[in-house]
Length: 195
Ligand code: GDP
Image 1 (cartoon, protein in one colour):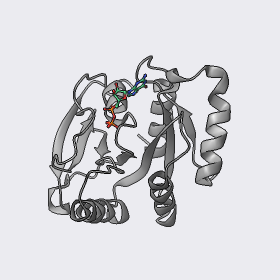
Image 2 (tube, helix red, strand yellow):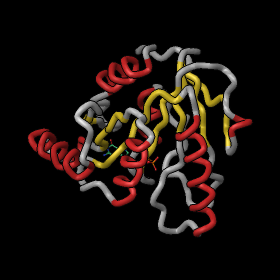
Image 3 (cartoon, rainbow, N blue to C red):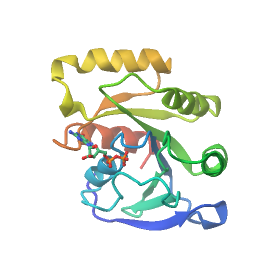
Image 4 (cartoon, rainbow, N blue to C red):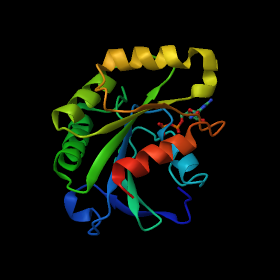
């Protein structure tokens, strides 16, 4: 998809703040530092639109990016920060759960995992939780430039196995450094969201 317009239109911590338009939404989830902001910026051709490396203690919000007046990317705060307090973690959980479990416009979740590592316990929890709610997931293995291309398939197979991935959920490779995987990611997203 050719992105001609992309802006952060809504920042929400509760449902009353979600957009009232009925555009389809793709939520983006992943462990902190997995490369989520870099992914968003690359996909939208906008350096610095999504904040990179979100700091612990920063307000944890759902950020709605409206794209071509056709769909939203919804940036979900990164999980797995060791430094956040129990109460912050609980608040995060409630906000995310409220959104993921109840949002009609949510058509799929794009979950990012690092191609170099086995999925963490948090990655597994997140994936299982989405499967429990029957949400389609697009898995994206980030930082593909960090390992040789010859090792990609093996890594994807390991990640799929560790997550007990549903065969219907696609798994893609991506590098925000080289732009590899951008076309494929857009194809997969537009197909899933029917836009
Ligand atoms: P976030 O916390 O998930 O939003 O992660 P960021 O997008 O801030 O990325 C975390 C770090 O990984 C930054 O230093 C990025 O420059 C780096 N990074 C992100 N994506 C890639 C990638 O595809 N390749 C490489 N080599 N580095 C990446």
